[in-house]
Image (cartoon, rainbow over all chains, first blue to last red; front, side, top):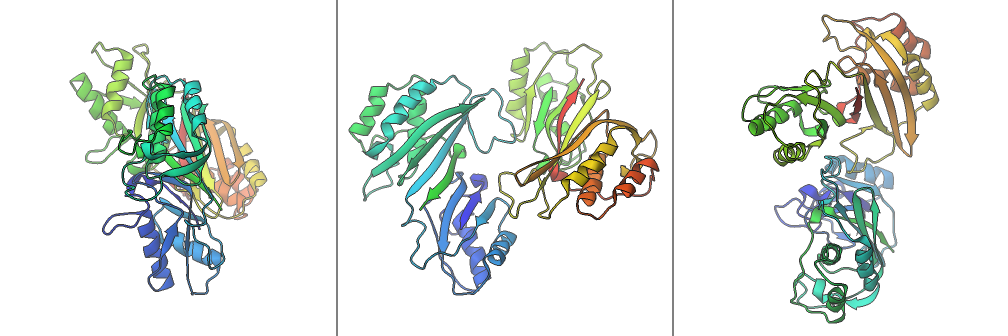
Length: 239
Length: 239
């Protein structure tokens, strides 16, 4: 299933007892339709407040049910802030996380003086001039395979911090500046920490060589700051 | 001031004791800044749940204060769902309602199967085929001066129900159908009742000649139905 959500009022994707999460709501609703406990696997977690235009999740059911009927039933019981946009039958061994090939994220910064009520949930507001060209010089350094330990939140006690980035780019449309990045996977809060580092470049608070150094000589405990969750959206996942 | 608001969580524009309204919040916040009771006049009321991209309001203050400072103070105290987008000094006799020349409204209907969480507050969902050409035939009948008593909600006990419509048109973009209408003024819920009548045309539930008849022979007590508030937005006001 392809899932969209406005993450503002949720404690993130991952199921947590007693807290509103996307995976929690989906599991509860699918379980009710299926008539028994179900497991839903997402392509990956998104943090509290992060949005999705194209999160992908997979599950297994033995219950024979037409796909459009199941989709209607799911959306009929889910809050309006979570929507199953597409539903497809896949082969038994498909797994939304393990088979994910490429994930696309977007981070939005609004530069204008006043944030419209119609976008304020989806942007971080920073009404200060930014050197986009400098930020794109930094973004270009990200492509290829790197150890992103400097941009991890420290939660990865074990496991590799090496990831492959396929593309990373800042663009501007009016007063809205967007960072789009695609890669085979991301460490927890990595996109927001990379955005933060590149934002520091754009504000002249960090030199390009120092940003490059964070990539070339990864420092796991050098906790880089992170930008707020509201600006981040998981755009799509390729398989 | 030009004001934007997401009307979802408000009981409309007009101040009402004990209920969250746009005028109420603005009056409260401006009064706190001004240090005394203030009056805020809007270009017109919007109903509960109706949004605005360009509501205009005027007020008077004797307190000398830089406009950008005042705007920052207002936005600093208002909820994020209400924003003062522009602030201008006007001549003493200016009045947001009395001087309004033309108001522009938009009504949005979403035709797709599933409403994205990112637009669900701003559209009415009706996943049924619509005859847009037929709806535009009806819309064309609206321009010029007419007695819109058939499209009033019955609240106008006194006063004229004659209004002049400058333009009215349906357009489509993907699965989103929008009705834009501009006129010198609108009766309460008139745009939603006109949208409803034209929607009935588009669904083949009403004949063009019957729609025309509602305009030609106004029937004040012939309460036409109204479409839900969520799809309606006050786009701008011309002076």
